[in-house]
Image (tube, rainbow, N blue to C red; front, top):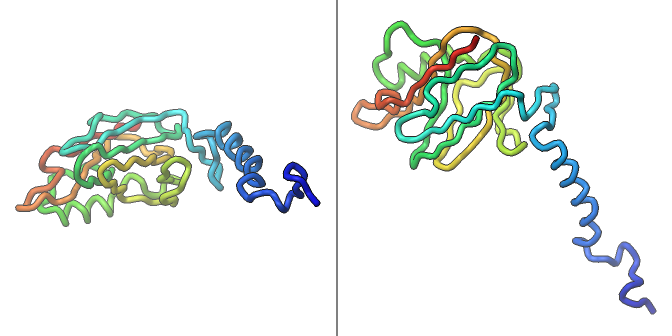
Length: 182
């Protein structure tokens, strides 16, 4: 007959058997924190971290200046009450007419194309990873980090090109900014 304190390991409740391994995983993740590496070696927790807040109808800050060749964490947070997108592209010589024309232009001229690995992640969980990202869409209250290494120098525009109805758009209402890569 076994006493309560004399149970075999298999007879212990599952929660108790998983306690130590779970604690070890939590400690390891806590120690690596935002510095966990992806499969290609690009790090979460890049040396440059810039927070960009989205709201109706603005980005804060409206101008972002970064160094070419230095990994960047662009932390996007939608503090607005409606969905917003973040797209960065070469600024056109003339403003496009209509939301669909803007989308086509921004998709074809995205800055986040062929510059190496780009990751969109939230607290260490990949949302998407690739070498070309045309837009990042965020619902109200959502926050993600876009990790990449800017390589092309110059001034680029970023904007939200969602329609507001009646021919308007978030962009026309002022939701745009400038990314300067030195």
